Image 1 (cartoon, rainbow, N blue to C red):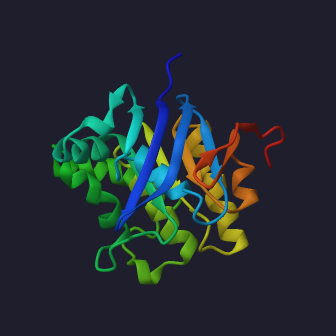
Image 2 (image 1 turned 135 degrees about the vertical axis):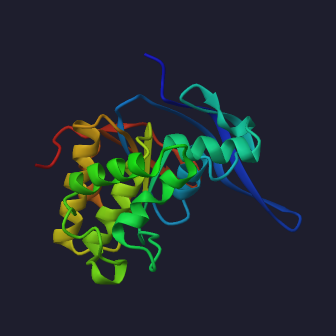
Length: 233
């Protein structure tokens, strides 16, 4: 089976004056469809940079990066934006919800870029809002929701376009232990029941234990994969 994500000899450098600062160095990675990968490592190791490259939010300096068979690094900006909107769902540490929109409207937002009718958009939103257990909170604004509920809205927003890939950057980093456990359970269901491929950056070992395997980044270099043998219940 071909890899959903195929990375070969990928490097990312930033320039500071005359200096060239390496962030990622000669990365090779394969992620299969339906995988759940946790990326771990110290701050500044390049985890979020790698996640942003996979999601098409940034471009590599060198190397090959294919997602779903598409060389996303070669796409022009407008085509790359269209590709992201159609194929990638985003979950961030701080939710990135729009405060003046209700939970329903926040989830609907990605669908406004699609040709779906208003009725079709409503059906899609109702489905994922119920899926994340917020059917009774859809008219609430972010300020009226707990942190865990806001992250559920963010997950519903990530799912609403039915993307082939979910990228999550510290999805439990701003949550208390109980809320974090609920979000991790939901992400596990997204992977196991909906078949979503997930790449997650985390510092939280409890979050990493929900993944199929873990890879560590340190000083821009990627370790061998480590299987998660005993996933937490």
